[in-house]
Length: 484
Image (tube, rainbow, N blue to C red; front, side, top):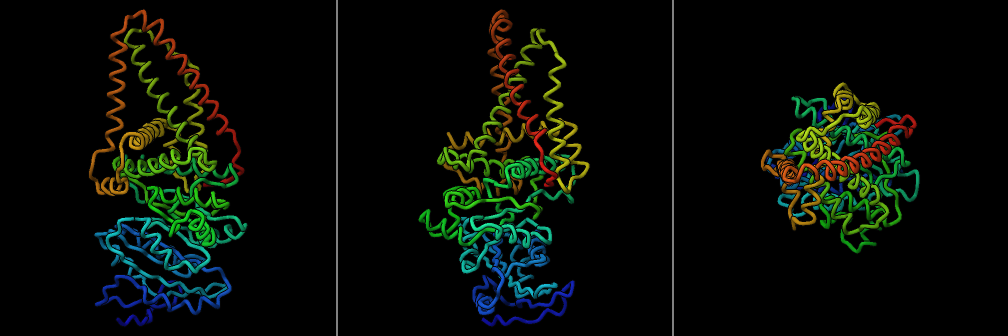
């Protein structure tokens, strides 16, 4: 098949290049074109960066993702879009960018070859797509992993390269992520996206406070050292860097990179914007998949030092859940027998929580009024925390008692607007609360007032004071002007 490159008549910003003709061309992939630039690459003096974009039904975003890479101040040398299991127009949208692109800046002329691979049905899903793309660029120095819905700021690639080259034992650097809320409409979607932005910001702030060392290199936009990936594959005796052993392939790979003696870092300033989940159903599918994979890693590597932060997060979420469940139970039980008495000191934890949420919101560089309202109104953040508690409960239940399940498929189903698994956690929480209250009401009043309620309120007070002190430490801990 003739794949001769033909010139493009015009490209914005003085960008001169070529595109591959696509008429009457099946474009299953562009493997035959891989040799077009490789001879030139042998003579370049800069580190070679190959980008892999695993794409599953990304027709609405893939064009913006590729264009954001071509608009970088330092473009990757090759971009491989690996389409898998898709049944939309991702292929047609992506192949508009196929071919060789050139642009110049003050330092040099940059050449970027864009290849489109449609690998069809792929049982290994994103992992298979990542490894397919990696096989195309393994001779390069660095691999840039980008999700099919993630758009980066123009200096992101240049910044990540500078940072990963700053130390010989840095295995990967992740961009600072936040959710793009510029096109979000509707109260539910706005609330959920504000919660996700706060969630990302809290993670990034904690990383900044720990010298930017992070437990996970996010697959959304991260630069990996090929040398580190090769050492991981050799050390773990696996044929490829990414494997299907875990449903959170980025977490497992990050763990293996650390075990090989490399650091995984958060960038100081490179930024990327990811697509947010705008329904409770889709958010549940995503977060349960993430947390279920994390639980499996934690259970299989319980003492790995890189998982300490994960354990602390899950333990904290457990106590958050217990605290709120216990408060709801004790409040209803006390009111039922007119034994409730309010003390103003109880407002203190709420005030500290609002101040901490506000601190996080103010640290978001792209913050807006919705981020501020989410923090200061308290109720939106509290409700979002209840939702997250449900995700953690479902993840641990699935891991301990649920047996094998395809969380990838569950997330895809949820994003298509199907399935009601997101209702399981709140229904169970309500049923358990109802059963506990029923048992409580069957007890003699003397037992309720002399034993159950005093012990319950005392234990809740101790836990609340402890959590409030922890929040105070986080509130007062300096961030040295960092913006996330």
